[in-house]
Length: 266
Image (cartoon, rainbow, N blue to C red):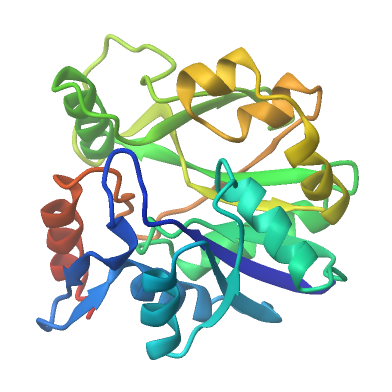
């Protein structure tokens, strides 16, 4: 099955304008933009036939082409990354069996997250969309809870049924737990990793669906699938000693840089 990875990136982020072009310093002191680091992460995925950056901004296009990325220009009217992926796939002429949305704010996404996600969708022919989830250890859960206490919108959490079909995604920390956990102890909370794999039919249908109240309230694009009766398959992935965090706010820059330094990522 052919696989296209699309990295959607827009300049006019509500919470962090210009975010794709923000520099992140790695363990060796090398400075690379967020979009370049996300593109480099995509290059490490085995089994991907093509990787493109999808944007509506010439500044991002210029920067991406400078480090060697293929760029697909998309409309400024795309409401989220899924809509941008749908337009990018159409602009490329379609034809791919699986389209992966590797969001441009997740430079720490390990290749095996994406590889496991694609494998999960391949093994579930009834599923039209899949997304990875990572069981939080105590340290990550504490970071999520700290963000909410301080009024920051941080990572997203997911709950799902026994068949790994999503029940809900939220920017609140769900499910609630009153327990405390050691930094390296497993918890009942799953961090939603902002990557999606779609079958082309569901991806093409998505932009025509109305935005529902849950998507509007949470600002989470995957809820549109659920609000329109389409199950979202949650594929559990393993950290394997890697730390993971998305760049949502300016405060996340030093956090991600510290993670890269600790893991020796240049």
